[in-house]
Image (cartoon, rainbow, N blue to C red):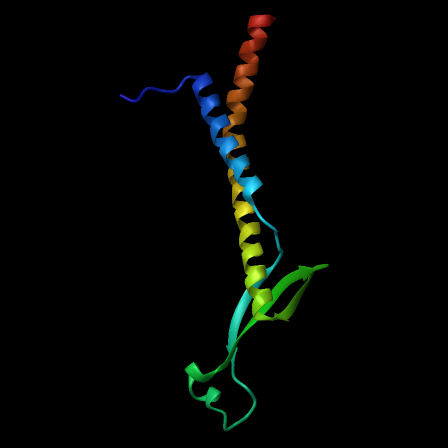
Length: 125
């Protein structure tokens, strides 16, 4: 038989988990919007080997894509820019994942916190 946690134990567990998530936020580095795509391309020359052999295509070329005022904008990047922005985009995605987990945990904790407040009101009221 599984023993249910008491209200205080659940709140303590939620608080501990939330603090761990909050600590992750302090470790997040720089952030960047958008995404990076690396592509190999064929050129317009009819005699070029890139047209018949996929392994001999030109590139890879890195493109950064984002939305600006509702429109998609893309820009060709240097290798250094692409590597840097990929790291920062990864940081942003990690931040968003942590934030979603914090919201989910808050949603679970809310009924327990409200129940505790209600119990405290009964004791003091």
